[in-house]
Length: 353
Image (cartoon, rainbow, N blue to C red; front, side):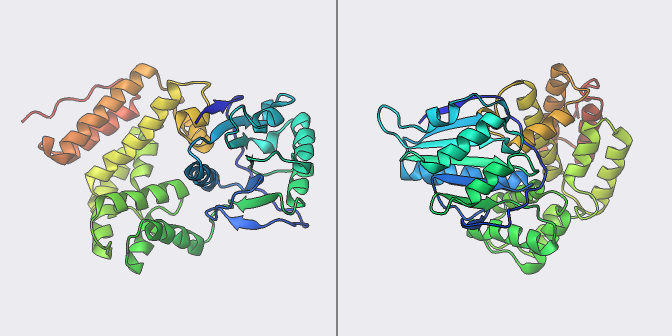
């Protein structure tokens, strides 16, 4: 298996509006169905990333020799698509993922429309379109390509019922049972961000044995409806020390656990460090979705690599302290927040025994 990248990463978050004439199957983001051409449409980047990963894993399970190539449609070079999709010397199956189709060049539109007329055997081309009017000619051609293409729709989850369905599926796929009231608590606590909601579900799945009850969620994520760990982390990373400390106190007073609080900081800082240390690298090579890279780049404003190192060390120390290595978990959290909010210029004081 080889993974190649043809050009730089990037993606839009605008919504996609299907054409009035659709002759191909339009599937949910999680309904994986291979086809010569797969259009992944819609504004929800997290779900689009999930859909594309699921499709890759499906194809790789069918044939581990799958060759994966990536193209950025906004920096397209003539001939790239057919070159990457054409059979190789040993005839391995090919998956060509095309990002930023909503910002594609005229050359890509023309060649992709021609490609639809006669896709080569053994190739799957995935077109990621985040929305907008650019590329409408191509979208219309794809949606009219009956027998050649399918569409996986990744629209934003705006209604509570949609978020409940999403969270319920996370537990169902993992083979875990969660009480209806517990599910509502998780969704209420992380309803603002699908990625955070998914992370919260996966953390419960990984950390909790047996059925997940309301008491479990209350103990694990108490106070998150008012203040989530990511709210505290976002304020600290942006340098808003006072706001982060007040949010921390509100969460703790509501019964929030220090351990997942530190985990939220660690998750965000690891992504920031990865992006900072690999500027210009592709989303695929970093193992991140385009939306994660965009968010990390925004969060990195005002940070230095040295500051990131100090902050990550402070988070590691806080993690050890809140898990029993220190005398005062709250003090450990406050020190971590001050260090992060100072962008690594304040070194935490050791929590001596």
